[in-house]
Image (cartoon, rainbow, N blue to C red; front, side, top):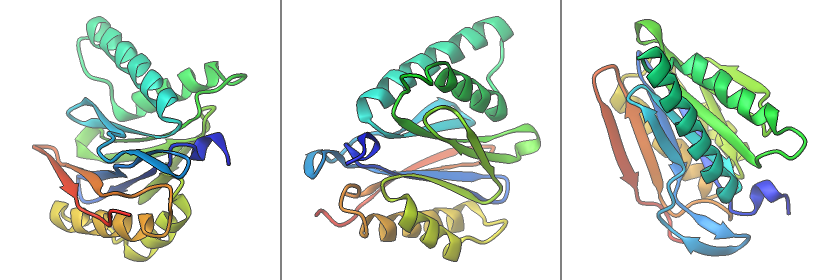
Length: 204
């Protein structure tokens, strides 16, 4: 088993019309044994940028703490929040810095940039970015997430339709992966509000 699959995870970010959604499963396991069913994989950096970290849970928590620290320094120096593109570059640089002994994480970054344009991207454990205009996925359920998102995605979805689409894609995908699941956690972010919802899924 790969070290990336040790704790299990499923992450997806999807864009809509001037909004985005980012969703994850809630299972924390040690290989096939479930340890917790309320694990938080998605973190708010600020009101318009969210970060999801799949992979090894201990590395995800360490990396998150470093990123929060660097973002706070940026806020003190620049007196403004980071744009999503800038934050993605920061994550990439921190990961590449440790390329010879990497953090075993696959981050998903989603945010609203200038003129409320949604930005999503993912990267590998050494910071090679993959930008997308529709959706990005990460984690042990990524293969089934690709298929579900590919078939369900539509352009310019309103926030409610986007929530429905990303939730259905997540729930149907984690049912096909034994290392992730146990419900879902969805954020839908618009220029004016952030909606957080917990999904109930199969408890097995």
